Image (tube, rainbow, N blue to C red; front, side):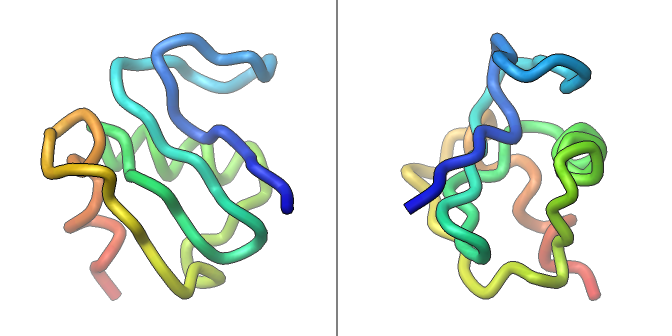
Length: 77
């Protein structure tokens, strides 16, 4: 199974923007957490070639804004 860190306070991938929070793609279609800021989540997803429309599931570790802040924007059609 592949894990792809999309959003973190320290990026290990050149070109991604760092910010406090966390989001990780598990496999091809499960997003674990959404980071704090939706625009940054979408920007990093785009840089990594991850399409929001390809996601089938989102799992939140807890309701802290640093882990769930991008959820409502992600749910927009």
